[in-house]
Image (cartoon, rainbow, N blue to C red; front, side):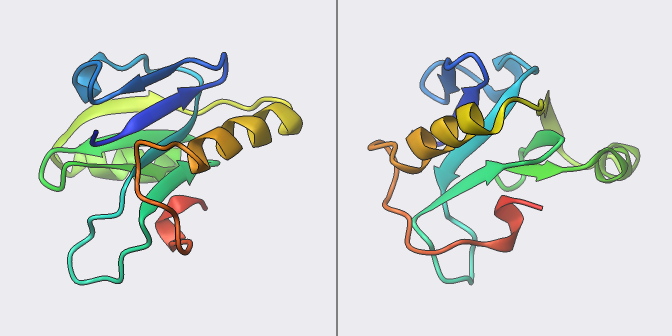
Length: 120
């Protein structure tokens, strides 16, 4: 599995379900994917969360998170983005439950450290 998206209603959508462009673009709470950044110490899995927007880059085959200004910059620069999803606020206790599930997802490598790109 390449990635899994966790939504506020408890549902998920993964690379096994379809393409990044087919993912529901609303109410994203977290995205998990293996850490495959070249030249860096791997931390097992990346768990993107607390971002306003999430986007998928075809050149790196990875999801990233950002804010509105960053997204506009990427889109105006014609970066290879094929999917764009919006994060959403929710009660902290429910958000923490979703992140806990994402962090323990058995379909991804064990997490060994945090990376800056995971959350703002």
